[in-house]
Length: 342
Image (cartoon, rainbow, N blue to C red; front, side, top):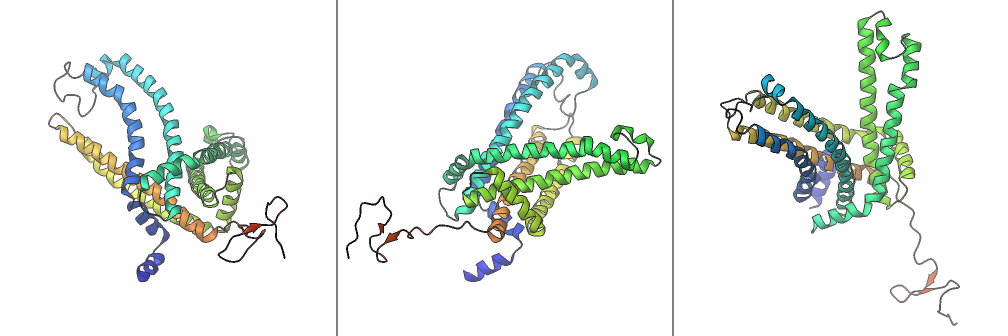
């Protein structure tokens, strides 16, 4: 048993985190069902409309692979209304999915920090409820910080930098530069910087929530400031596990996407319902892996935080009491009802 623990501790953090997440099947199944349920709400009106308008008006499987120009022209008004209504519903569901993610974060951290077994789903839900309002404040801070990053890279600071370096007033005015590659590189650098800032902000959010749960803290702002300092002091230890997990997640999603793209292109009048079911299953495989990877990032944040975040100084509970070891303890402040006789 001791050898197993030593061997496990020698494994990279991201592998231990991934193993810890994979070993909690009921929890990642619950986490996967939440966005799936919201997605079914969004797709319901589309499925109902196609069932009413395409089931008997067109030859069987004629619109299975794609919607031709005749179909789009005949139903342009109805499709436009579906898009408008679906966009409003999708915006609302996106907010609900993010709030569900706030709840699920509390559940994952509760389970990873407890080191206990049994009734994991109950402890998961209890942790989600316990930390929801604290993590909601972290979510608000994340949105505000992301807005600041967007302003820096798309607003006045970036435009000022473009004007100083390239003589262009904005990204739409890059035709004034002498080289086309200069304009291309300017766009790539802007997009790359924003992607890097977004990824760093997501990692910061994971470590901030972990710090709050680890210390049972209340202040999201103070935890966030401390987390930025920890990431600055230990950039490799904090960012490396998340980078490996992100790369592995991207690889799996790319492979599943490439396979499903080929099958999707082959859809036609000769396809069966099983082909559609396989496409749906492939999409759920990608969603499941993203859910597991999300849980693994919290597990990695817990491992790294326990190693580099200093624990809180706990006061001595017996400092203001008297009494022999193992016996009754009596408070000695002015409010106690006990007397001591010598």
